[in-house]
Length: 313
Image (cartoon, rainbow, N blue to C red; front, side):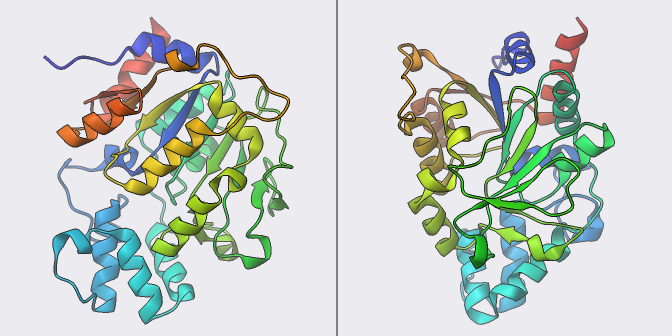
């Protein structure tokens, strides 16, 4: 029988604010009915995977390769889209894909419930607004911090929407300060769709985008967040480590030097994190283990149900 995650420990650490949920595209599969349904466009009721979005964009550009590996490579296909059309057209296509009232999944709702008593720093590389919608539906306040890619006037900053603000502030990453003991923050590391004002749409999606982001990740990620990362465990939800970009991000976040006034923890080597991924490959299991992350093969909806059960027990 497969080994179950330590639900009680994860739930308790979450309530203590000592864990950072890290959301990937796989969390959104919780709303696919049936589970093996294929995305066919915005009207199908659920969001695409990275591979499905890549195939959609490829179909619009006459992508020159018929190799499945190339067709599923979102960064490569997006780069070709920009070369054959324009960056603006790519943003418009992506906005059309994500500008729908998709229903948040159980895990989004659970995080909003936890944040009612324990503020969280939630990191996501998803472009959609499902986590924000879950918090709004639960009437839970949050600040939003977004890495901007498509705005050259603020490319050295992060965009910070304080709770209830209609417009963001552009803040240098090393100047951002939010009281994380009192404020839940949703940090969208790879940009976001803005369904109210498309001018704020921003996507780390092409090969050049990833190269640029990774080249300056130590200065692009708010210093306050990096310090927070060093002291807490991660809970990776819906991620596969086949994507080399994510592997580089994780390495940088975990090996970032402490700030000049900080001290390294003697027990850092003992700090373990967890990953929840449905049907991971043998390669992905090895890649997670090499990063001191214990991976569990669990359906994301079942994972959320079990965490809720711990809260009520």
